[in-house]
Length: 226
Image 1 (cartoon, helix red, strand yellow):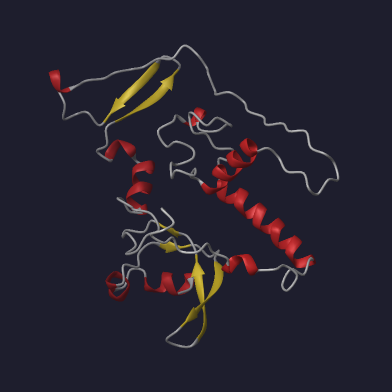
Image 2 (image 1 turned 180 degrees about the vertical axis):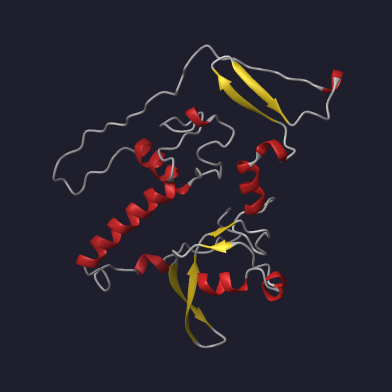
């Protein structure tokens, strides 16, 4: 479905039945996917929708609120019914959405920090032998890089640790688990693009022996003691 088709159905009974609401952006991306039913490739359109009043049936991530709800909350937080505060000065704030609370129903804790700690800047330096194709960085640097790219370490723990404050999530530490990248998908894209540029210039098919892919050890027997 194109953005134009989406906007045509918005506000109609057919659109409501198909959970099509909101206004689609005119900017979109097109990708082709194979349709086994049609036995051909079809266009799939990706675009943003403003003020959608329904949640997609199969979202990529679990969603609790519609974009229309979030947009209305941002535009008019006072009437959202959500308890929140607004900072008006270096030592002043306004409490909102607490009209239904009184006496002992109100508990407000204000934590004032006297330090401006932004987190430790991190740099990883490793001397390498220029022009030596056989040189590789140490295991620690390589493993921290790989964990950061994968988003998990070898034991399956998330990298960075989701429980860490934002200013402590990024660095080169193993404990706590830190990552090199704020946006690891952009880092992955850079690596994949570079790998593709190298593979485009070098013929690898038929040049590398694949015998070891089928290699295996003999099955243990009762006499082997394994």
